[in-house]
Length: 204
Length: 163
Image (cartoon, rainbow over all chains, first blue to last red):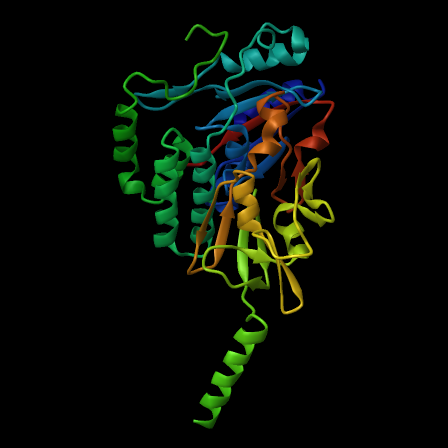
């Protein structure tokens, strides 16, 4: 989040806005501190139902959608890290995404990252829509404090849309002692399929 | 015993004439809508026409149930799968409308909560023309934020999570 605040600071005078939406069923208590720590000056939302991911077919976080001045989607569902995060013996994130964003903000539709970019099929299947309805029902029960019912509908959502890492990872976050093992198991089941949709225009 | 008889009589009277009141909760987009009065039905969600608009934006007009340029024909001078009159009141079948529109839904009978997915036909400008669908989400101060407020700007819509 501090990385995106730095990007916003650079680009805010160029008719550019970041709208960040935390896909966090835990609400302000879970997500708010990260906005505060980053002193984020862009639009900061907490999307408890993951409604933005449903609306835009996003399956993992962080992800981004580029929307131009006419409201048209230019790029979508890409792994949008602002920087590389280094821990002890591991690192995650990427440094090649922000230059793409900056090139687009400077050059608009003439940017090499806007021109000729392939938008994936955006049609959401009946199962994916039904997964969304189940996930939201789970969120409702979570807020009521009824974790058994929440879990029932979250498991249904995960079965209906197994490609949504958001649904799995959100569910696992409430049993942190098993979350790591759950992630490793599902990651292993990818068998070479990407964890994030590959970024068009970059070599990796 | 006298009270019990009275209650029984009252209960029969209600079910025979006017249906008992019952509240339901509807989840649609990111809103939670409480509907104070529904027509009890183990399989379907029947609401008053005014509540139809509250739960999914559709308005009951003479030509049918309409949202923007979508209109689903509804007979209103006789009972149908979408519309009935009971006890002098009109009721609209929200789940039947969902089925006609291929809109996914799931309901929890015990808690009386209905959760609806997106209406596929309303997503055509996104799926076909790649126009960004609008949304309204409360910001951290409780003020609704819409994507459409940022028209004429480039927007990076970014999802992330604490987990």
